Image (tube, rainbow, N blue to C red):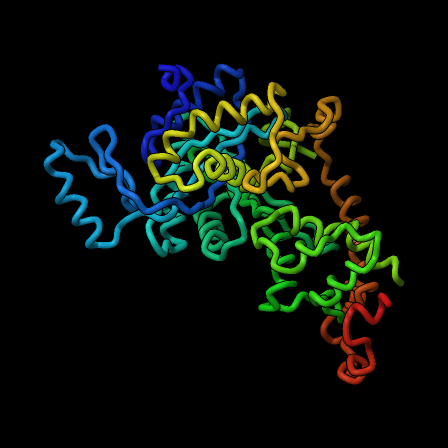
Length: 411
């Protein structure tokens, strides 16, 4: 009864009932502005369960049955075809304002080896149901997985109308797709924290070479920082580290680590009154939901994940209202620089609703261009004004005479 009253119990897959429940919550809050969406996957235990006349834990969604006597044949067929689900795909909704909890709107029993087209199909259905329920999706967040990025690009390609901004002087051209009926802006967002994690992992794996201009960074250089007292890095951050540890990723690629290394050498068409909070857009809400899932039940099944959503929502809601403090746990990604429980001063939020004019954007681009140009020169990349024709013929000779790696500059 409590779950039904709160309207947070999820039906299998992408179902309009789930979206209507969130719509009612938003109405109770008096909110009709944009909403940030996110999607991501997490692993689950391969296990079949029966619940409310359905066999749960099958790839693609629940299978209904009329009589319990049908179960043995259904189970045998699922096992024979290797259709047991090992991953759960989640969609979340986040009102991009302070102190409002994340809403999980769909949990999907994923199929093995999903293609970008499969993900795109889910995205289109998700956006269609969101609009049908009266939820205005402004952004769709994902991590940096190639299939997910490809699906986002394909989703952008479905648009026929765009909101555009161009600045030919700095070669900046932005197009935001308008999707739906009526068309509304939907921005594709990649989670920057996943990018940081990927960059940190590349240092230890060696699969790809991290290059800054004409210099490269290796794990040996990062390990050398352990010898200095002003480094935030620990031995576990570099050797035998958890590849999914956000604390390790943040510390490895933080400004403090960089400082430690250097020490040793006009018009708004949509949502005009809603402040822009960039940290509310991305796939981080999915990570927090998955984190609490693994805390409550480290070996959860598809049905377990679905049934614990009311409890997770209650926990997140009470944390964001200040009624309880988030405990320290590696599962809940407490290393995020901006966690869902860390909200900025509300007095400053109003300034984020003051959107710049085209002239102000051009002025900011000029400042950003100069800063990027100086950074490129420091890294040995040359001026941003240079072209491929400006590359000197003796580039190979100059490279041979340059330091072999970044440590040559640091020590």
